[in-house]
Amino acid sequence: MNTINSRQNEQRELERLSAQRQLYATAKHVFGFQLILAIPIAIFTALIAVFLPEYKGHAALWGLSVAVLDTALLTPWQKRLRENAAAIQEIFDCYVLNLPWNELKVGKRPDPEKVHAQAKKYSKWASTMPSLKNWYSPTIDQLSLPLGRLVCQRANCWWDSQQRRRYATTLQVALGLVALIAAWVGFAAGLTIADFVLKIAAPLTPAFSLGLRQATEHRDAADRLDKLQTFSENLWSSALAGMAEDELGANSRNLQNEIYDGRKRNPLIFDTVFRWMRNEQELQMNYGSEELVEQAKAALAG
Image (cartoon, rainbow, N blue to C red; front, side, top):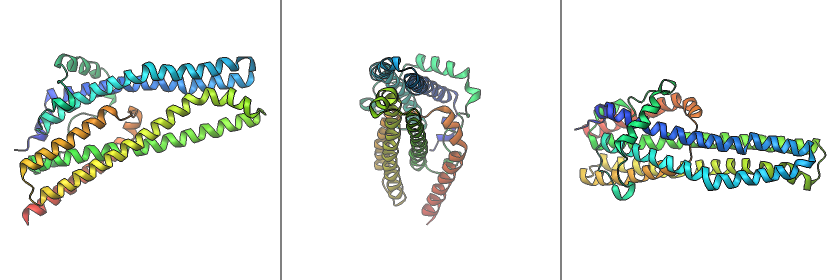
């Protein structure tokens, strides 16, 4: 029996979604702090080094210090938050999609007390974010559970991939603009190559390192998600062709393992960007789900 729609809107499941969103938000705040250290402050120190040459050593030291802080403290902290959020979202998916918990892959279930505490924090600013109800398209209630589950899993892959490709492109454009501005400042100030490297390039190194790394990681993540989407679509075709329910369930669990892996290691996207992209992507995602529902109806009717 397909109970995805009713289960996903149960209060306990909405609390789980709230908790994972809060943890991801905290991780994004950590990332935001990294960006502040690496970009605006780095640009400011670079400008100081240009106009006050006696501080050029301080500017270079700042860039190196930020790079060390990022590697030793901020990135590991961000990683732990992502892993906790992914584990809570995995509880949600396992219950809503009726999948067995994979302790070997995920570990033990997060404590309910911690889930509740994070959900309570989220409730204080939940009104600024899109609703958590109907996480998956309501149209799936027209399908059997194995088929409805597969539509949801494909939607997860498609949604995440689209966001990351658009975000990576935005990052690359922004970095290009910063590079042009830096080159113009160096040229206008009449800097030699050596002075340009010491006064501008060195302080900006953390910004470019972080930005390029983020763009690359988002594109790599999108590539992995595209492969998962292709796998889900091949599995969908096999399901409509008559794949046994047990085999379909096992393949869905394998697919879920990869979705979980991506959630815990993929780079973050700021909530502002998420809200900006959400409405258009949600319409597209729901349209795709409706198309799959119609495909299934036609195949089963034939």
